[in-house]
Image (cartoon, rainbow, N blue to C red; front, side, top):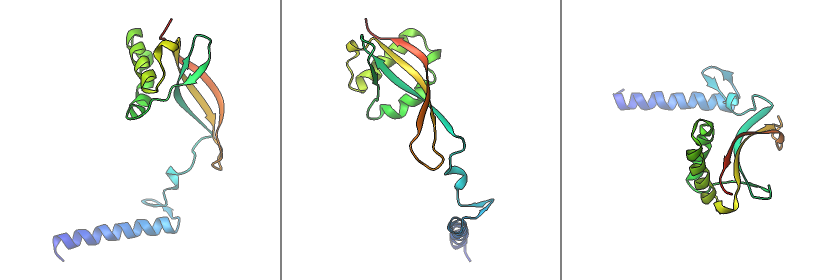
Length: 139
């Protein structure tokens, strides 16, 4: 058997063994049906969320659109370490990207939201909300 055919035989054989493991729900390493990654490990989860407050204290979730969504979540945990001017600059940019006029917003909050997860895949239930950073935006 030549080199390319040997490589194909090994690859197809490995894929067949993995497919067999998934099909039969085998949990013997290195053959697994990947249940390790598909089930909830704990009963709680937390995430950071942006919330805009207007002059009357009304809350509005800030949900940036487009490509900004992917990078916003990764930046939120670093906000407390940034100076006030940089925090404000980013908050105003996220407001604009979400279609919210920054002049109507008094404060942007970054909140850590904790939810209880249903082990059977049902809806989650919010159990806590704590302000991590408060950013003054407007008057």
